[in-house]
Image (cartoon, rainbow, N blue to C red; front, top):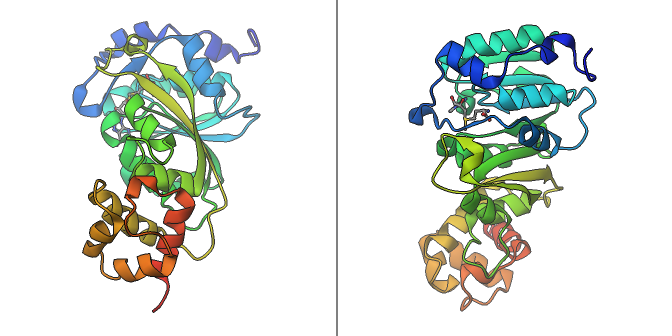
Length: 283
Ligand code: SAM
């Protein structure tokens, strides 16, 4: 061991060399903005808390910068990467990691994660921006609940991170805020400027840390999704107008006791849950 690291990991060439050796120029189509700064990568790997041998599921390891940091932090990593150009570099990292890294080639949107991982895992990812929100929604809408994952530590465009944690009454508050805060306790753990990435994206980024919460009984995911879609679909309108488009929406509004003159962005998450519960209840 060198500085507590297995010798294989300590002897790895710098990431820039790995990228040059394997011709891993960043491709826009894969949403590739790479991180090189090992201090920053170690900070991201520490967001979920101490790992002590815990399983981590990483989406999009690319050349393996964050993967190295996760391995340095003591995690057992299963990583899914879509760009086959990265696989030889990741295979070298796997060899250096003494069996603590498994790499799967594939599209994270199509993986049966509980079957792949076999045990609860922390999800950590510098996500491709083009699939980040879709993956988050997939992980937040999974059933049964509590979910198969233990925590999510995910990189987003800052504007998306702000929507996830937004409070009622703000411009950023919307469907994603309600869904995330219904099922979890999201917080922004780190903010990163464009210059942290190569190539730099046009916008700031942030890592959001999400721990699952107890979801209230008797509220199906589909009810939360349908009610918030209708309410925020016309967010400047009063609820009695926006919920007209949802079959049974006005009846649910009346049953919930929420004032139909209010706008979607003024409702708390608890009020959305109450509305969704009334909408889902058999009439
Ligand atoms: N983790 C690396 C880092 O932090 O430097 C790379 C991050 S880069 C923003 C996103 C990575 O996700 C790329 O390697 C890309 O090829 C991969 N990727 C994009 N779409 C994917 C998908 N649907 N499933 C799995 N990996 C994907």
